[in-house]
Amino acid sequence: MNFFHQLMEKPWAAEQGAVDDLHRGGEFSLAKPHVGLRVFLGVATVLFSLFFVVYIERMDFPDWQPLADPWLLWVNTAILTVSSVALHWAWIKSDQGDIDGVRTGLLVAGISAFAFLGGQLWVWRELVDLGYFASSNPANGFFYLLTGLHGVHLLGGLVAWARASAKVKAGGDLERINMSVSLCAVYWHFLLVVWLVLFGLLLFT
Image (tube, rainbow, N blue to C red):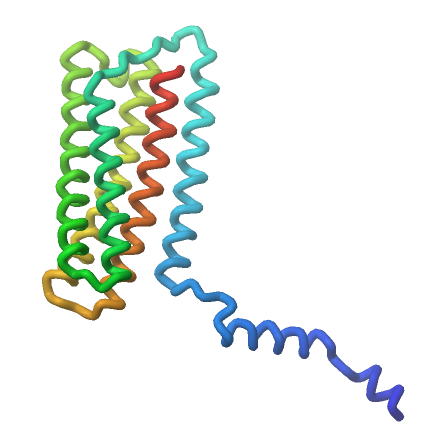
């Protein structure tokens, strides 16, 4: 009889229960917004990686003429770095419950982000004035495509930044503010890394 009961046991059900217990016990501690952001960043990473690979492969063709590197790109890189650092500062201050520090960090990050986008448009205008049209050379087209794609992602991030700033201004719940600021900071760090890779490609290729 005991042998019959052993045959009828379902060990996988017990294992599933153990996994569920781990989940309820906080084994998977990431909140849903953070999970969603990481999924999005994974997709965006694949997208940018594919473009970077195609960019490198396309350089081997004889019609590829390297694009000039405007000095303003160095300035824009520094500005985006300041924006990312400011958001990280706001994240730290939100963990400490310092609303004034959060407000200052968000303000500096937002101003820097808008300045970066304005600087990118300025670079585009300078290149067009010099005759670097998107249709005149594949290198030009890739530059406008990649920088434009990066700019669109930054614009999307500014929507989240605006929502976080609105929560701070309205004096919302500190936990919700911390969630919003942390999401913005992680996203900004991602955009900075993508830009540094793109800027490196432009400099060394």
